[in-house]
Length: 382
Figure 1 (tube, rainbow, N blue to C red):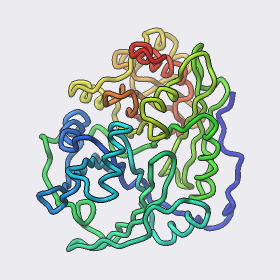
Figure 2 (cartoon, rainbow, N blue to C red):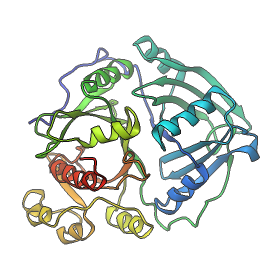
Figure 3 (cartoon, rainbow, N blue to C red):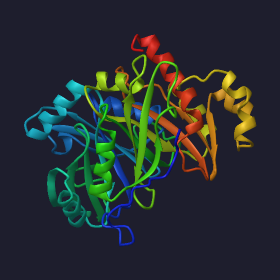
Figure 4 (cartoon, rainbow, N blue to C red):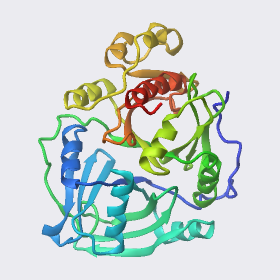
């Protein structure tokens, strides 16, 4: 069993970072109905709608809603009437994959330099660097391909003061905003890839973005009696952007990764972890708004205090809310996972509260995996 930092050394070690990043800029979802998705994430997740574009603003092909919670930004885009290659792509994406992530946008200080470095090291270019302007200033964008039909848009908004991008107009909340945010930032974004391709994509991030290997979980680390997966985490040097990558492992039955790949129709973003300062309040508010979380058996909590030790939240309250806890050499974390947020058993979310630990809940893998298997069994997909 291993839970290690990377042994690989990027080519630029000891030099200036060739691909500096400022953080996650946005996660864009292609959805069947952006208006309804925006309402759901406003109501259930407590996010605030801040910008919109659609037929009323001159966008005849697509409608897009921008929702924010602290530094976390989601964009929901749906096709009104496809008339270009982009519209046709989004339409096909929803038909083939259901609602899902099409873009993990990364903010960088210099888009042309980042794009040139990535393409020069083997990335597939999707959009050359270009400037978009309006009365609020200038945004620079470019895009490269990653696993499946996912892209990374590279964004420099240092000279822009608008609500999101040129073409979007500021708008007010869809529902009354929650008194306190449910989460403050995107902690990490997890991708599922096919059997045997995890190391290929780890190498891609090492080579194309200069990311290093932060953690790896192989062998018996993430396994139950029936199924298993392998996972490696790549991150930029500042750990602002973290991308765990999963692949299925050979086992007796279908793993959660196999199920995702089957119902999503290929590789893609499996879940997004959202950082919260108060996971108890977050879970209570989101549950009250209708969000369903995975259930953890009471037996998990019987010995939790013996190995996790003291945490901000008493074990009995963790038991009541079904929140998981884990501790490593740097501290501890609290986490909980939603059930899939659409009819297909694909995309879901994680709420995570960190206290020193930069891990991903290794001590909870077995409990989490078994909880997911119980849901798979209900769907007839185990």
